[in-house]
Length: 272
Ligand code: IPD
Image 1 (tube, helix red, strand yellow):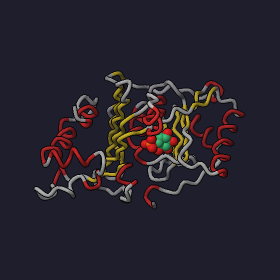
Image 2 (cartoon, rainbow, N blue to C red):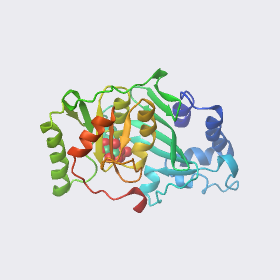
Image 3 (tube, rainbow, N blue to C red):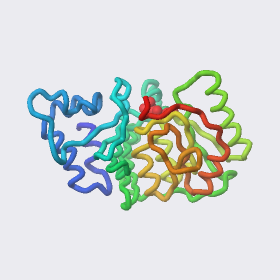
Image 4 (cartoon, rainbow, N blue to C red):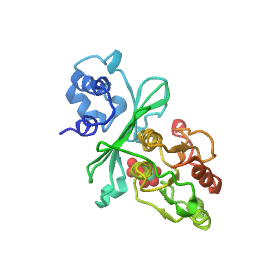
């Protein structure tokens, strides 16, 4: 089965017309769509020699990790936009460490509308749609509601930079949370799945500097719909392009963590 079928067909809370968007794209030129969506989504239609690019409902924008890696700009416009990470947890994937996901978010007018994250090795499908709830394999998700840091399991990811100054800040942030008596701190190697653990109540908070909009888009909808909070590390509203986040089961917990952190500057996705 094709990956888009695996991810989208059984998704909870998606309407037939949204599934239709994907099917319409596939109908337009199945070979072109299939070969390019996960490897060069910015050019998913541009490469098609057989037919003109679609207009109307099939005309969507894409932001995706592999496209950005080959130089495509990550600009979130008001157009309907798919925000995709075809493999989140690449390092895990390379080592056969079984914590790997596909993440697909969808935004309209810069507002996140729905998200789908597929835990590939455990066959868990997380979905969320704005105003319609969040689910894992059909079971409703709820965050833990924890407010006390001393009872909280906090997740984070290391981020891509390994220079001494960045590593010092990363370790110092972890040390600050441990001094603040967080019950535990974990790094699992996939930001999207760590965020899904928060949505399902298996963890209470998440923070990271150096993640990207494709790591965050789908998970943000899922966490919000599970009752959680997703904000900027400054304590202000989330900025999807700012490469930093604090997410938590409650606002109190999110603010406690934001206040403990020192900023690690990774620049912005839309300025790279
Ligand atoms: C990365 C992973 C990693 C996190 C990075 C992400 P990728 O995604 O989630 O754990 O530290 O910030 O970008 O590169 O495996 O898709």
